[in-house]
Length: 634
Image (cartoon, rainbow, N blue to C red; front, side, top):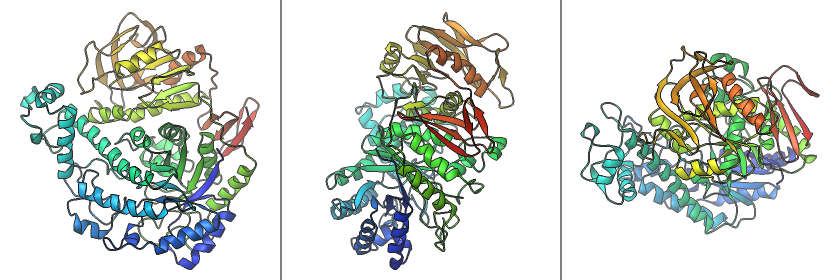
């Protein structure tokens, strides 16, 4: 697949006589794709049922006529004001019961049947009109599901939908629900599904089984909302369909949404994410303030490659300072180019910069674009032109299976959010830190969905923190040729958040039992015997498996038997490196201890070296200049 560049453009924001010049400059800069339309509902349907597509017809003709390929977005992330007058109860409610009001975006509840019907109407109109348009080469559904904490809604529509979902899940048997949830505790038993409210505004914490069920319902509502649009589009077009996901948004199952789409895409904002999503401490934020974390974008590249079943894009790439993070510095020179090549190294088909021109109005006026508001070049377009020149001499994307697989499970993330057991604990954080440790050892990693059962070709597979592990997954892992690393908290709950018997992890041929657990204060780490520390969380384990890692006081932290290893604690980077390095080397995989900020990514044809630091590095025969990308054939 050829590697291409693009941008995000809003023709409705600019005078029509400017469109042609913009299109010409996009092509001149080496761009192939232009995404439009995802926020334009008020201009497409200014009054309900009165559609105005003439301007969009002309915009698509101008852009396509210049040689650009259009990605057309459905506008359902920004319902117009008349929609709220027609459906005043369509707004999502937050956990405190407060309405998410009009005046911004994503102000809808996924469960509201009236709003879903309105979305079907506008998508049908767009699909009928543009489904076979030669310039419309791909479609995007909605925009950034779950962004701004908008997946979970505590509205009446969600309550009614949740009750119907539960009735279906339990085949109308309320006694079965009471048993599964353990509702005898605190006299929480129900007589009818209609009595079940949403798990918010309770005196103290709600039943964790109730909370997890609601999160699963919410995820299914997002999947259903997306499928509604996909089914309409499929009836009118054979062009690929995508949705643009976000960084560290885990309130719905992206794999399930992706099953209905052709391509996964995501919106990569390295500097903004460093401030509010990576979880880095203040010192690390200072070091990477103008480059972004060296692993966070890569993690999502690998995640969305899995969501897209091999096909994925960056739909929005940060081109300069953003407007929405706590602090918004400018990227260092060379970073836009580095981020772009990093995405291509992980298999991206396209990288699209957000946005073409900086807007002089409204909420995003301080968000940089490829052009300044006065249409002069901004730094990003200069680096994009450089990438375009380099792509002309580069080969196509050549994917290759990585030697290490890392399972990521959105349902496990929901379970950890429901029952974290410690203020600093999160499933995403645990998986990400193991991913960082693998990358620090010079490894490429494939992220795998929890539904995978064939692990052929992987020397090592990690499944950290997967709270509910179906028995067939455990069996498939145990029967594979891979060395399997579990824990902590792998297999810690059954499907309804009960502690299972036998006690976890209950993994074939691995005699390890989690006897009890504790979460640790951030200022009370525990030393490991051979370097590194236990942080955040620890389990006390028993069994006859061989102890391969101990804490400084002698108790077992990791145990091994056959091809399985259970790690019973959350470790710091040095700790993860010390347990993973010999295990990976014993599986026949070479490791390279990389300096912090230097990373490797292998494709089928190339090895990429990335230096996120402002210092040069010499690693063997490889000299890495500051803020640089080095490509070499494999």
